[in-house]
Amino acid sequence: MEKIIILCVMFLMAVFFFKWEHRDGHTHRETHHHHHRIGHRHGEGFSIDFYAYTSKIRHWNPTFKVSLSVVTLILCIVLDNPYVSTMVIIAMAYLTIVKGELPIREYLPILAVQIGFILLGTFTIAIDFSKQPMGQYNLYLGFCYVFTSLEKLKEVTFLILKVFAAISALQMMILSTPSSEIIYVLRKAHVPKLIVELMNIIYRYIFILMDVYTKMKNSAESRHGYCNFKTSCYTFGSIASNMLVVSLKKASSHYDAMEARCYDGDLIFLEEDKKVEAIQIVTAVAFIIFLILLWGFTR
Image (cartoon, rainbow, N blue to C red; front, side, top):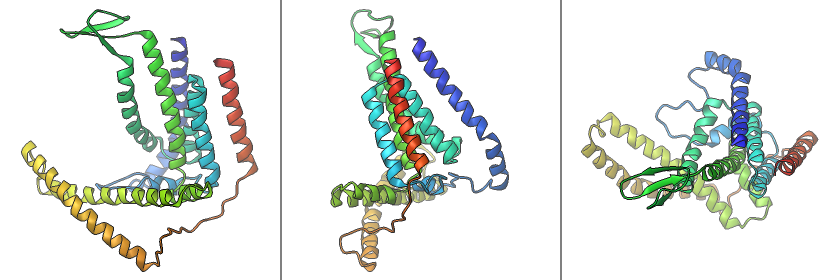
């Protein structure tokens, strides 16, 4: 339990540090760019690539960022240490918020989606059912007992930290590296061409469909399509059926556009040569060594 308290204090201190560090910067930005801040949306769909293109560490070498993210993710899983997970969360948040200058009010909602899935997935590990009262905490439901214990809660807390740290490492890569550069790195890693191209087309098409759905939903709302439950169900069904027709039309028009640009089976992107600075490599190696040492002293 003492470890859990220490980890929570470390995480809260990091959050307050990021908030204090960027308080003046947020005030300045909001004063001059109130209507054009990052992530400001007016009912339109958006691509997460927008954050990557506006990140201040976008000029870093994509191979370096992808490698750092993957190595950190592997360390989180292999070392399986709550202190290591906490340090990874803090370090990845520092790179994204401080170095990348992504506002914390935009970073936290992005992570909130993953946190919801993590909590739902770990909830079943924390509790169990029995016909007899068991564990340190139990609740009688009339036909069975729901029980848990400090050991289970501790296990779930450490698991949440590990998964959240792994997600933070991937989010650092995604929020600072455009998808075209990630695909470029995968090609350099000799990932099969078919997988890479399918991944790129599916990724792009998701946001195209999201934009179409958002426009349909806004149009339905302006015509009171969600005024009651019955109308909402009818509107949802209509949008779902129209999405199939629209998706087929979009697929045909996008393929025609690709053929008009001499598409011959290979998706070719403009690749910018970005050099890796020595200080970045040294810092990354020092960070990895620090995580291993932290694991050795706290296991």
